[in-house]
Each structure stands twice: as C-alpha cells, then as structure tokens.
Amino acid sequence: MRSSLETLVMNHDLPPFRGNQGLADRASLKKAVYEATGGRTFKRDFGLKDQIRRAAVSVMANIAEGFGCRSDREFVKFLFDAKRSVQEVQSHLYAASDEAYITGEQFKRMYSLGELCSKQLANLITFLVGREKRPPISISADSVDSVDSQTR
Image 1 (cartoon, rainbow, N blue to C red):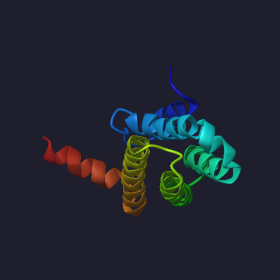
Image 2: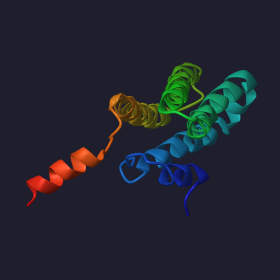
Image 3: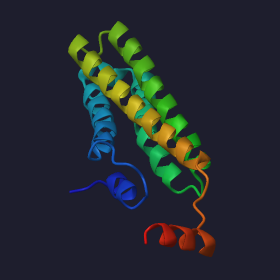
C-alpha cells in the first residue's frame, strides 16, 4: 500500500527515488525516531522528545507541502527546509546519545537514515534546478519541415 506522499510523487513529473525508496526512507526515519523516543527514559525529557519528533515529521511535511507549489523554484525551497529538518534530527540525536536516551546502534541507524534522506533530497533539488534552467522546447512549422526533409 502506498503512502500519500508516494502517491504525490507518482503523480508528478519527477524522477523515481530509487523506486520511490526515498519516500520509504523518510517514513523510516520518522518511525525510528518515534520508536526511540517512546522509551522510558526518553519519555521524561519532554522538550527533547517533542523537538526531535517535530523535526522528523517536518521532513515529510515540507516535502508534501512543496508538492503543492506552482513552480520548481518554490518546491526547492521546501526541499531545503526538509534537508534542514533532517539536520535538526541529527543534532538532537547527539543530545539524546549524550543523555544515554538511545543506544549507539539506534544513533547509527537514525543518523544514517538521515544521511540517506539528505542525499536523496539533494539529488531531487539538483534535478529540479536543472529542469528549471533548461529552455522550453518550442516546435515551429519550420523545424518540423526541416526534420521531415532530413528523414527523406
């Protein structure tokens, strides 16, 4: 079953995220954060727990919000916001690790999920910026005639 975010990507003219795996990675980051923050000791630190959870949700929310934009340029702004949210999650992971709220293995897993998300967002940004810089294709009657005469 596809997530609503996967459906959004499928309905836009965008390159696949390695078989739309990128969307699953972002959802996995959020899920991993929620699982890790549900632990007994982490639950008591309301500020850090809420902050890291909001940042993880913000990654997906910014991407979804970006899909509603009218231009690639606007979309890219939201993708940069999503990248910043990934970095915020990673920063909070250090704080959680320092306080022994998460294990070293949890830290590594969530941090590397964040790195993967960040790279995929960077690739999508690069694609959109490149697409915006390409001149629109215009076809005139002269160009069609020229191509037609060359193929005869």
